[in-house]
Each structure stands twice: as structure tokens, then as C-alpha cells.
Image 1 (cartoon, rainbow, N blue to C red):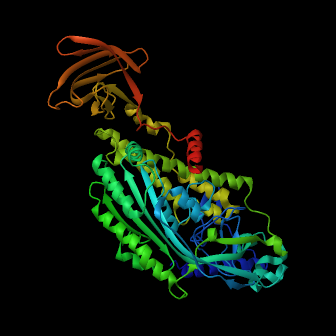
Image 2 (image 1 turned 60 degrees about the horizontal axis):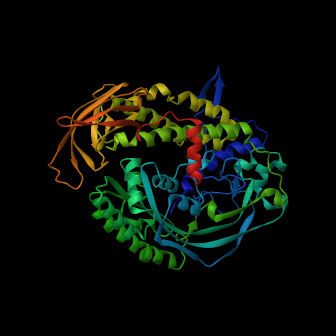
Image 3 (image 1 turned 45 degrees about the horizontal axis):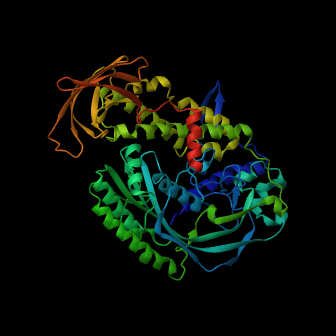
Length: 567
């Protein structure tokens, strides 16, 4: 169960100190940065609430429990639970627990996000940059070009109804009234919230998942075409993955994971070990040696049906049920109770800055996805050393940018914590980001195409040489490429000398072929294919865009990613 007690206590002290100065008419320096000749210097005395989560008005969407307690509020501007408890409220009723279980059939990552009311991929939202164990878990199972997650969950909740102690300022505590300042404090929404909690659900939640990581998007698509996208419980799903991977010699890994809020999460250690960050439980297996994960899947299902179910069915203790998050809560705008909400600090300019920061994160994540196959033996042939150096330079830039945007302090989240300072915050981040340009990707031109051959394809090893091509078997026309004697590809000429065998026949019976063709468009090569010694026939071989080639991130690519997220 998450305990924000120490973090919240520290931040509350900072915020109370600053805001009470404002209440007493003392000038308070809220600026995190000092602007001097266009150089932005950090103010080391500034502190902000980073471990709470967010939503976006008017739809409240959040997973973390954050500061969900009686009398708490939610800030539309920061998209987070407000740090101060400003509302005069009490619990009016608590319902009997109700359960939900999704253990017999796997659900997609998108469906999991919808149930939990969280989206780590949509731009302009704080949860894209938010830290915390629960969001780290969600990010870890997010579907990528090269990965697929199968998810299961179970939870039990009680609804807690909240009753205010009055109308207008009578709905505020003394501290809340001090912050409110007769409706004149522009920061009241950030500190106390421009929405108050009218009810919330507390309970216990268990999420389990299988995250399959393939060496490339091509292998992932082949797996889906073979295995489909519908899987049963976590045991049968793991066994199905094992069967398909073994039969079709699919390379990759499977990661079995679990995350729990409420109850006694430490009991998961009987089945899995914690990840390196200590935030959730995990076990990784190769797709070629998956038996340990099959056993772990069996243990997890047993844990969910027996151990976890027992934890949440015991007589309620204070630490058994915990607030599950904003997605499990209801909020009411404060104007409904006679209070005047402050003017939003999130202007069109601030929205634009937030969107631009989100787009920067997506851009660098895009590059990490695209270079993944080159770093994980997903490319069909061994690549040139210089090419791999360029890949690693791109990896370094993208990782550096992501770390900058995602850091707990001085990162993009600060644009949500202090929306009125977003322009300065973004300028500082922009000055540190490493731009990735077309020049950084010029080296990819050498692997832009594959080219057809009898019974296979030729892939470039990442060199701008006529002979820097290697053959990969790809059955076509009943022929299977067995051996390459030589190959040469230029813009105008293409030739190869190969040996093939026929599908369904003895593989040791090889047939020798020579091809030579010319091209006017640098794509199609027309010429003659000769079977040793002199039997020839006309043949056209073609360059094809390689599935491993990618372009510089652009608005068109961003739009395509956005469409995929929605669907």
C-alpha cells in the first residue's frame, strides 16, 4: 500500500509557509527561476509536489490515490490532487465492498488503461510525465512496436460518501478560508483545488500481466498472425505463448509482472521477486526457455484466487483498503457550493507548451522504439560497426532527452505543478534538449531497402558498398535460398550468384543460379536469370522499402501515433 505521508508532510510545510506569507500580505517569491539575460537559473529553495497524480477537466482521469482523503480537492490546472486539505467535510456513509474480477480472459493494454482511468501516452496530460510505482507499472506493460501485453486484474471496493459541513465559505476549514482570501487568491485552485471530493472508492487492487517482447515488429506481427489476440487465463496464455514460440522458433522474452494496492502486497514475493526499482514484482524468461514463467503464472493465478481474495475478505483493517484513485472518485466544481473558482492559470499558451513537451517525449520514445531491433538482434543480418556506433549515438541522445523530460524535479512535470511558470520552465528544458535532425539519421539510407532474390531477400549491413548485402532465406516460388556466392547492387546494376533448393525436396540438392539486371529507376532491375550452365529466362528483381527503415519524427508521424492511441 502506498504511503505518501512523508512526502506530503514535507511539501505541506513548504506550501503552508509560502501561502501564509501571501495571506499576511508579505511578498512571496514563487518564482522557481530567475530570468537574467535570457539565462534561467534554478532557485534551490523551491519545492513542489511531484508524487501526486493528475486528471484533466472536465473528465477526471487518474489512477494514483494521491491525496484522496475527506476534505481534499482536485486542481484542474495542475491536473493533480491538491496538496492542502481545505474543505470542511466528513464521511457520511461507507458501502459494503463490491468486487470485480478479470482473470479468465486477457484484456488489452488499451482496455486496462480504460478500466483504470489512466493514459500514459496521450499528450498534454500530467500522467505522461508523472512518477510513481503504479504509473511505472502501467508504462512497463505499454504496447510498443515490438511488444504485446496480456493483462488481468481483480479488485474490491467500497464507496465512501462525503458530506460538506456548510455552504459557501462554511464549506472551508479555517486554513481553507485563509487560502481562499474571499475568492481573491489566484492560486487557490492549485493549493486547495477548484473541485472537491464528493465521494471516492477505497479498496484493494491486483494487476497481473504478461508482456511479450519480440526482437522486432515483424516478429510481433508474425506471432499475432499465428497465435491471434485472444487468450484465456494467465496460465493458458503462457502455455500458448510457449507452444507458438517453440513451433515457429520465435525469439524474444516474456515478462510476467504483478502490482498490488491495498491488502498485503508483500505476499506477492511468494511468487515473484521485485524489479530493480523495488516498485512491483517481476520475472523474465526467454521465449526459448519459458518453463519458469509458466510456473510463475500458475502461482499468480492461485495467488489471485486464494491469497488476494482472502486478504480483501477479512474484517476490514485500516491498512487493508486504500483509496484507489481519481478514476474511482467523484468531484464537484466549487462554484456548485457557492465558492468562486480562481481564473485558470492554464492559458492557450500554457496548453501549447504542455503539448510541445508531450510531443518531445513522444518523439524520443519513437526513436527508442525504432532502434530497438538493431540493439536486440532483431535485424536479419549482422550490422557494420560504424552503423551500430550511429545507432548508439541516437540511443544516447534519445535517452538523455527522455531522462531530462521525466526527471522528478526540473522536468516537464513542473509545467503542470506551476502552470504560470510554464514558459520559463519549458525554455530551460528546450535549452538542454539534444535535437535529433535528419543529419543524425543519414546513416539509415544504407538499410533503406531490401532487394528480392530467388528464394530470399538481400539486406544491407549498413555500408554504402555494392557488396554490403547479405542473403536471408524467404521462401518464394517454391525456392529457398541456401547459399550466396556473391552479390553486387548499385543504382543501375544488380547481379548475384546463389544456390537454392526446392521446397519439399532434399535440402542437400542445390541448384546454382546467376542473375544480372539493369535499372532505370533504381528500384526495378530487369535482366536474365540463368540456371547453370546456360539455361536463361527473363526476370525482374525489385527493391522494397525495408521494414527496419524509419524517418525523422514529424507531425505526420505524430498524428499517426495519436490515432493508434485512440484505437
